[in-house]
Image 1 (cartoon, rainbow, N blue to C red):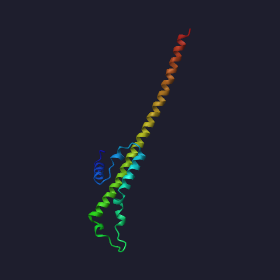
Image 2: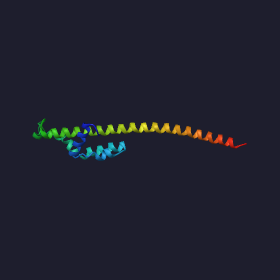
Image 3: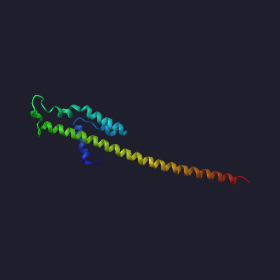
Image 4: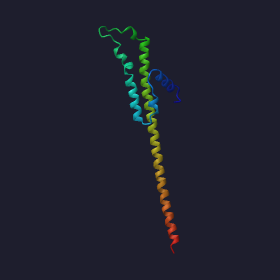
Length: 134
């Protein structure tokens, strides 16, 4: 993580109770997304507080949930951090898929080269066999 924004996000997630260490250390892209979703689900109460901002009996907001309040700012910041974390995981997944595609291309090139070398080896052995025969 060389990008300052990513480091800031990772630091923020660590202090907000969302530990992405396990997510980022996982090599399987599908497992990364699963672990990130589990982290968000684990902290769901924190992210769902926005739904309970309205008091049913009145149409007014609770005092602690007014726009500009610290509680509202914390909820919005946590939600944005979770969204950015999911985007980060998606970007890591895309980078891994690109690396896998590149490795597959290299593997195919090596297989073609290996087949060519095997053919040359066979021709060389056949040439030796003809030299030995009278």
